[in-house]
Amino acid sequence: MKRTGDSDPAPTASPEADPILVRAQDELAEVFGNIAAFWGFTRTQGRVFGLLFLSPEPLGHAEIRARLGVSAGSVSMTLSSLQHWGVVDRQGREFVAQTDFWQIITGVMRRRERAQVDDAILRVRKILDLLADAQVGDAPASPAVAFARGRMVQLHDFFELGRRFLDAFVSRHRLSGLLSSIAQQAARFPALLRHWGQDVRVGP
Image (tube, rainbow, N blue to C red; front, side, top):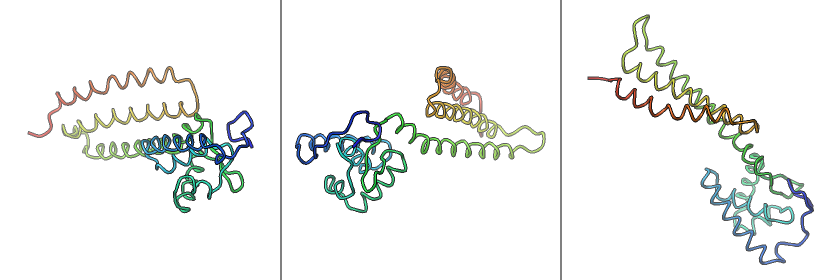
């Protein structure tokens, strides 16, 4: 049976019939377990994906549970989460790994990182509104408020640029011009912070 993203027919040998394959699966499961933990997912999610990625045939709950030594509940929740992230696909009562790593990475970034960036921008805008409300009439804002607003404007622009980069990345658009803009913005950011730190005095 062909797995997602494979171009050649999958072999028919059972993993249990080849101890070398079993060792390779166990090692890859640990590799992906470490990667998953590093990126904020669970080790079990990584281990399940690693096992499925190197399995010649789709695997069911019982096989995954037996191979990884985890509970039935953990396997069920892990497989559900991996399907949500687009990392594994279901085939009847069994599961296969997604093998297009570009699709995996961009899918996760679209679902997780994009939501975090959107939330950050929304909160920054609320802070900017709060600082704007601190100004009464035509009177200039206090030095402390002006200092905070300047930094928040810079942060807002930086987050917006990051969102543009993320959108371009997951859509596979050309990034050369956008990368140049990000590099210029990033280069300016520390200098502006130093400038504000030197020229703006807050308090006595």
